[in-house]
Image 1 (tube, rainbow, N blue to C red):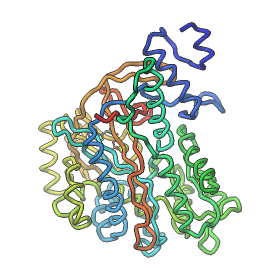
Image 2: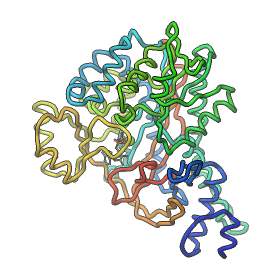
Image 3: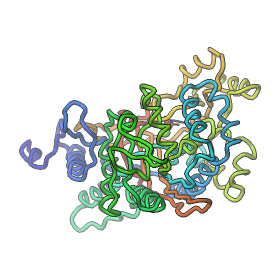
Image 4: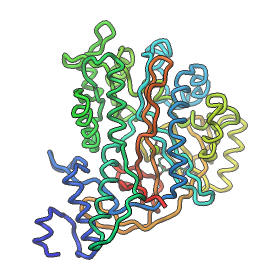
Length: 468
Ligand code: ADP
Ligand code: MG
């Protein structure tokens, strides 16, 4: 393809125009045309296509089906955990003592009245993340995200892009079987369940999306709010926690922001200490929590998604107490999880020091880039002291693939590992679970040499599974 032809197609791919580069250019053009984009920090008003793979990555159909089947059970589990004050209090005791962020979230929970202070409903866009464990062939759960799950907008469109590129690449007259690239309803599922939450609150006012000031992944969020407006006619206002602090107020328990009543608050921020640079942001979080708006998630549900809770649930009999009927299915996807408290903790430290490459050390944090591996894990464990803010996890070892990726116009073929996210849409009103369904999927694919996997953080690309 000539330089002119490339320019006409809107491609920005650098380098030679072989078949891979031509495919990557089609991917980039698709991203631009369909809004698979991130904000470009370097140019105000600028976009850059999201990092993507130029085709789907193989993932076993059975493992995908198991993860999808378990998703509704995990949504029900985490909501039940969020409603169990004694369990939360006991499980998080060490984390509250050793980790100031968990302590602050717990403070919001207590100061908003604990369980009694909660709105009698919960709406969730959850995402349970898995890596395929090569030795067992099972999808093992990395974590369940109960707050600020993202990429439902972009992931939906990446699945569509991979189907499109498969058709586009077919030779004349060739039949293309698209059954391996499952349709992905993540965007609609998230938008529909949030709108259902808004309706459950009496169809009042607007939805507030709480966002980070410096967010790059803005268009993924915009896809959600645009979908909710186009499909359901509900307006979404965007606000940072600092703006809520400055311009929000409670009137008889009702949250108002810039004069609008807010009946549902959807958090796409607030999950990391960086989102609370001053006490003002904490005051905003508390104001929201104390209001009679429905929260997605409530601070109780946010806390239920802590890594410490995940580890507690893996202890014998604990999951079974919450989910007697579905525990057997759910246990299939549990990786090894170890407490670092007390005597048991000393045993776990020994285990990990004997083979640091087989474990991951995880603090009570969200958002990527916080875990310790190999040498850093060894160093932290050898340092000793109170390890109550960490859990220890079996390192999942997924199979490697070769993937054609494009990031900011740069085409790279790299050896990769993938992580599958299964979204769940969940709505409980009172004691009745009104909606609980598998809500689409996300595949994130990262360089095999990288430990962590964030897309916006620059570690990974958006991908989709090719079921085989
Ligand atoms: P966060 O809340 O920061 O997203 P995660 O538990 O998802 O924390 O860990 C971040 C990343 O680290 C994951 O996306 C995955 O790439 C890697 N990771 C986490 N746990 C494991 C594990 N047990 N085995 C292998 N990789 C892991
Ligand atoms: Mg994660």
